[in-house]
Length: 111
Image (cartoon, rainbow, N blue to C red; front, side, top):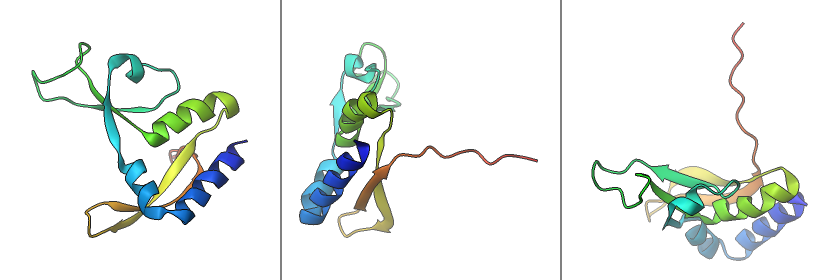
């Protein structure tokens, strides 16, 4: 099932890379209830002292990939990762180059 989701995202990227990049660069502020969702991935920002908008003292954002993984992970036990180039475009943003199954990095084992 995750393979089909990845295939659909990559197909959409091939068809309209500018729109897909714009969507996946988007991060919207979210509240504490969404930030505490068990599967939707959010970014917790460190607010400036005394400027936190949320009652819990965290400023949080959510993006499209966080919402997608909130749906896909409970169904498959896996997550999707957006792949970005190392190059910065004229717009100051990295280029979205594809989607793949998320594989957490394994720490190097020390002898």
